[in-house]
Image 1 (cartoon, rainbow, N blue to C red):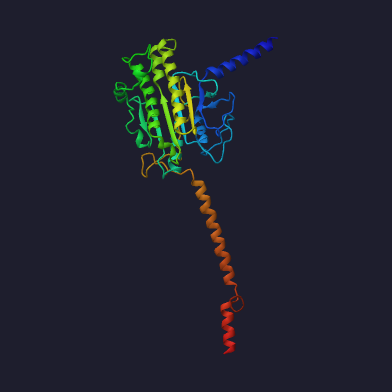
Image 2: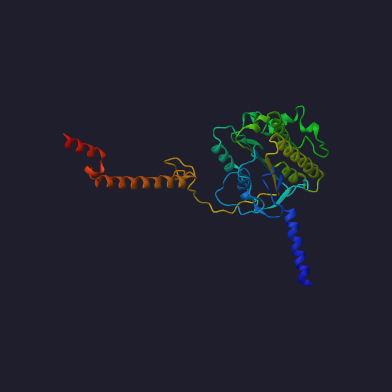
Length: 351
C-alpha cells in the first residue's frame, strides 16, 4: 500500500515538473514536418540542432530526440521563426499544439543555422533577422533583408515608434500597464517589434517566394523586467502574459499566412537561463590571424576532412595510374604491340 502511494506521488511530481517547467512549444508547422505527441524533454543546447533539422539541414551530431519525426526529402519549410521568452516557464497557448519540457536551459543562438543558410544560398537573398537584448535593450544582427532596415530596434527608436499612430499603446488594452514606467515600456516595445515584423511581412510577401529559406530569431526579455519589478502575483504580470500570448499567436498566424503554411514557429519559455558549466579551452575552429597574441592555429573548415579524403584518394589513384601506364610502356614491344611500327616494317619489306 505504501509503495503504491509513493509511486503515485512520484508520478504526480514528474507530471507537474513536465507541465510547470520550461517549455519548447511549436505553434505552427507544415504537414511534412511532424512533431510527435509526448513529453520528451529536450536540452536547451540542442535547440539550434532542432531548428536545423526542421529546415532540412544536416547537423554534426545526431539528435537523439523522438519528438521530431523523419520529414520529407523533397520538401523543406520556407521559414523558421524561433521566439525565446524570458521570465516565465510556460504560456497558456491552445491545447492542440505540440509542447515539450526544456532541460538545461543554457543560453543559445541560431548563428550556426544562419551561417548554414548564407553558405548554402549565397547567391540568393535570404532573410536572417535576429533580435536579442543588449545594453541598448534591442539590436539587430545578421544579414537581414533591406525590408527590415528601418525596423526600430533600440529603446529610443521604439519609444518614438510607440508615440506614432497605429502603435500598440492605442490598439491593446493595457489595463494595469503604464507607458510611463521603464519596465512596461520595454515589454511593450518588444510587442511592438512583433507587430511591426508581421506588418512588414504582410506588406512584402515577395520575400516568401525567394528560393532561399528565411530565419527569424527573437529573444524577448521584457516580461523578465515585469517580473523583477512587480512580481508574478501582480496584475501587471497577468496583463503582460495575456498580451504576449495573444501577440505570439498573431505573429505565428501571420508568418504561416505569408509563407503559405510552409513555416515553422517555435516559442521557448525560460524562467531564467543557467550558466553553462563548461571548461574553458582553445578550440581548433577558433578564428585567428597569423602572428596573434595567443599563437592560435588557422581556422579549419567543417568540410576539411571531406576535402582531404577526396584529394588524398584522387592523388593515390592518379599515382597508381601513372605507374601502371609507365610499366606497360616500358615493357611494350614496338614491333609487335604498336601499329605504327608494324606498318613501318611492312612498308620497308615492300620497298
